[in-house]
Image 1: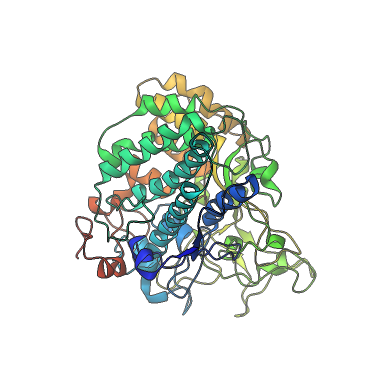
Image 2: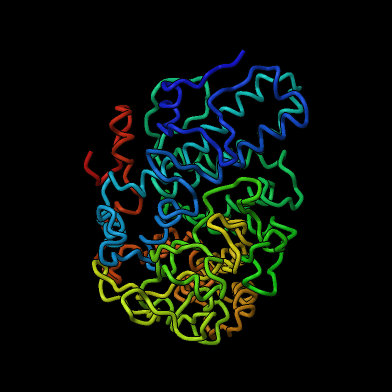
Length: 503
């Protein structure tokens, strides 16, 4: 017997609509207890949960985690990045300008994509848990499988807690009713409980790209680090406690080793989304979203040996110059003349002007093609195709060190913070100031994690999110979370819009 996931059930999964993973295996059917009884079958089911991390794209929205919607959302509403309109390009109904100005509305497609990315992952996990439950495995054999799946589901709910706050909690695959909002505190408590309950059953060892005990500790540390911003209750010591339980990782001596094509060997990466274009993975094309259309000429002297680039996201003015010239991490951005490898001269744009990236941006509404320094963190090399093979890093050990440093400063012990931030700064070739304070920690987070999709959360925690910056005025407090997408509210009348936003 096969139980079809009907449209009604999909709607109950928060209108994610598509349950297709990036290996093109359709999850529109759930097998009965005849499947999921062998190790191979269990691995296939659990593997489907992990493949959901790669997102999907359909006629409704683009939901790849590295794309111009999901990933860019956290970047372009922060003080780190922007997507200026360049002539007729990158206007797209004003959605990127609204994100930069903090005037977004509930019909912004970036917001819809972030919602659907997370809830589609949750829907898939709920279906897999249902499948495991129906299998003939013993209760004892099911326990570690449930723990791994629920911890991964908690990661998605952490994202929703951060982005949207008051979201529905859906865990029962068979429940076809339309859910109502849970409060942000309820979602917070749910994430915490799911992770802590899973801990005893999770693998305590270092296992690449799997939801291990170390990964769960890391997500809990993030939860506690942002607890005051999320629910008004600081939990700095709890964050420290989680960080100090994480073992088996170290900083790689070369910062950029974390972002090379074969980055799966880095001892620093705690959690990542694996990609292998030969295995059919798709959606990992972030490296083509930032550079100018002709950047390919600076990467290979052979014609058409590097894919087209879209000339989109760039750093906001002031980000590049905040790095000292001695800071090795500054190379995560491209600035200045771009050289044609075939001729040795500066690349010319189609308008006859040289391709020279400048930190200055004329305006958000009408920037020039070469304005704004560009993303250059992940390796870009000749012979690459549109679908890249580097794994997308979600959590690094550097973050664990920086969380501890920040917590010690917030607890009034900056001297205890020094050894942690010292490791990060020394690798970058930088010396620490006499005093380690929150302003320094904030700037160090910007430099260490540039273009890693986490700056918005740091801005909110440090309070800078609400202050004016380039092409943005003062931000209202309610915009610390995004509105529930308008299409979701239209379909589910049980949901209420987040405070401050019109229904």
